[in-house]
Image (cartoon, rainbow, N blue to C red):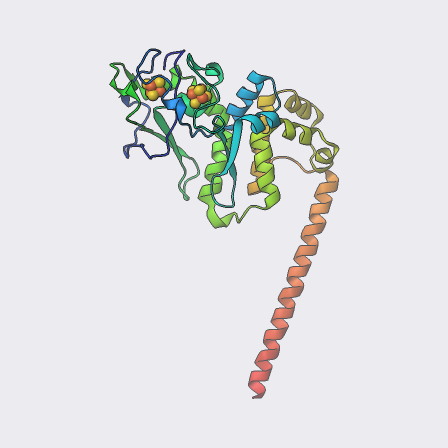
Amino acid sequence: MNEDTTQNLPFPVNPVLPQTFDANKVIQFQCRKGIACWNACCSNIDISLTPYDILRLKLRFEISSGAFLQQYTLPYEMEQGSIAGVKLRPIANGSACQFMTPQGCSVYEDRPTACRYYPLALLSLRRQDEAADSTSYALVEEPHCLGHREERSITVADYRKEQGLDDYDELARGWRQLILKKKSSGPSIGKPSKRSLELFFMVCYDLDRFSEFVASAGFRQLYDLPAQELKDILCDDIALMQFGFRFLRQVLFGEETIALSKEAADQRRLQRMVKNQRLETEAAARRAMEQDEMHDDSDD
Ligand code: SF4
Ligand code: SF4
């Protein structure tokens, strides 16, 4: 899309064509100021935000992540009772984006990933038996969008470059991997606790609150993070966000890459010991009952 052009978003109808393709595919599309459908796409929004989208926008507005979430977003459940996502909140009593102006997108340089991708849909998949996820694309063709009738041909790879998506995708990779892993792991990981779902929301979307959490005495009591690493994380939002994804892999999937403090490790060892003892006691009691029942049967 041209620089002063507005983009947009998947609408409630499902306009995604079934064909998927890779980045070499050539599409015919151009969005430009002056086109008859100008702003049509931003008038009826359904835009999910990545953690990096939120980071860029809250920095643009020079407000905290909490204030940004409150003013500009709505939470939603990605799966029932599971991890949450965040969408752009439209204007009050309407469906248009709060950032839409007659001239186009007022946050163009920091517009979200979904706006940059339009009219492409990014499809990240991970099958249960595969370690890595795979990426493909689909074309979203909606009747109101006249950009498909423009004469420009461009590969998906070049379109992504034009829209600045390499950085955006790279910085959202850790978040997408968490979601894919959660979705593909199914019951083997079990249902996340309420606490871990709250942590997911805070780390991914409310980065300033996560920063306070990492800086707190409670965090330092639990985790043994080298002082320099802690300092680096706390003075760089992107480093903090990436650390957050690592932290969530530990919380949600038990990938222990952040060392526990000695006290926390001792406490965990103790809890495991108590749990193992309890399991052994219960197993012994079960065995004794079974033997007892066998004796009763043979007495009969
Ligand atoms: S952020 Fe900008 S491009 Fe995206 S929907 Fe809003 S006005 Fe349109
Ligand atoms: S061409 Fe499509 S993306 Fe561009 S303003 Fe029109 S509806 Fe929006």
